[in-house]
Image 1 (cartoon, rainbow, N blue to C red):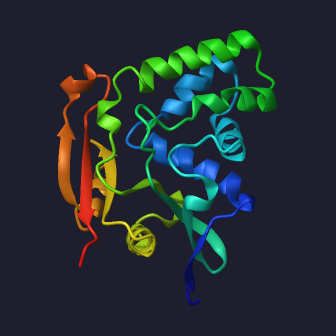
Image 2: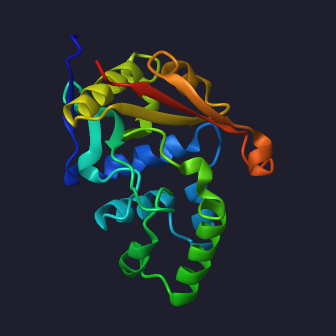
Length: 220
């Protein structure tokens, strides 16, 4: 059977797929996503929270319309977000906390649940946000492929589509980052980007194995 591959922009009908893939992307290279750790005390499944985050337009790492979806034979199998990072200081963590009341209302959270989640989120993501400072005009985030389709070239399809999107938007540079230990992603990115900066485990007090940020120039 011939494989017909195509790329399209995501729509709101894709939110369940995007939420699942966001969770997949955030797990690598760990067994558990930071979302799962944050949400465990609330009793809310991570995928349900992420879906609600997208529906409330609370994602800072790509709104629904920023996502590209690769389809094979009409089935969504891979995705990534390509977006312009916020220029506001301290606004580069994944969640817009100003939208948390809307998310909490949709999920039926109590005030104590909201307060404990917000405190835990701030401690993780906003205590020292310098490593989140954007290194390019546009950023690639949430790069994910369905487990059953990994190793079949979809990462390259995503990167080519991401570069095309950034060029269409008139960006001069494109960036991406990877947590150390995610070897497939790192190998992929090094075929398309140059290393920009590395944060080693000591920077995170050994709570993270470090990460590398990449950048590619889009100028002619």
